[in-house]
Length: 107
Image (cartoon, rainbow, N blue to C red; front, side):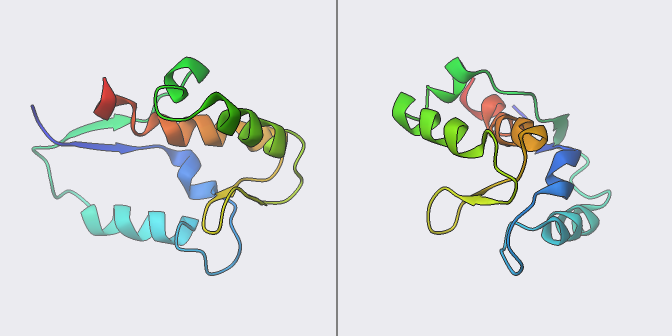
């Protein structure tokens, strides 16, 4: 099995407080650094994660909290000390798209 580089363009719009390490500039820098290297790696776009898939690694109560907290948020919302959910319901797909980055690793 080949190693995989799993990405999605929504990561370039990850809305976090200034200076947070998971900011869009870091994502762009990593992709620039990778460039055409790692040609032997499988490359894939992160799929959307279904709630049932998220429940394989997170409790139902945690997922309820995340979905409730971010449902109508108009600014980034802290989930814990260093994890931020994106602003606005329009960006809610971000949380399941980011989770989708890991799906090929657990299937």
